[in-house]
Image (cartoon, rainbow, N blue to C red):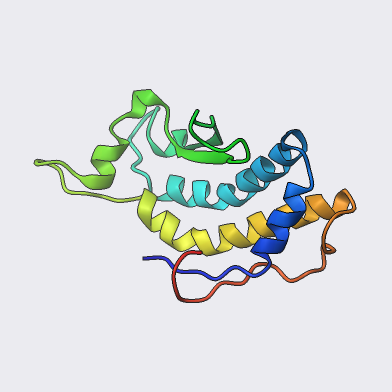
Length: 150
């Protein structure tokens, strides 16, 4: 289980809520993309490599995910994974009856999520400060500590 305490989260949400969805979406999605890049890199480092192309490692992508119809209009997501033609990434991650698991998604997530949260928070504050909202860029980044993911 991953546990973190994020400082300034409520304040960040209040500042983002001052903006319309049209203005807040690029801030949040851009921050998620920025924070997800080190995790994407770590996933690619751990993914299986095959002689010749294409292989899983060379096809780990990061990109925005479409909002589901039942989600709030202020819910934004990014995903990290491979195109559908590399469907066998899950067989590598979880194993099969004949093939043991060789996880590369979960270890990368476990290792990089604390840093990703800090990057995401700093990126959002930077963008808000550029629009004259919230605290300055010099505000402390989002520290984390043991406990539950908040």
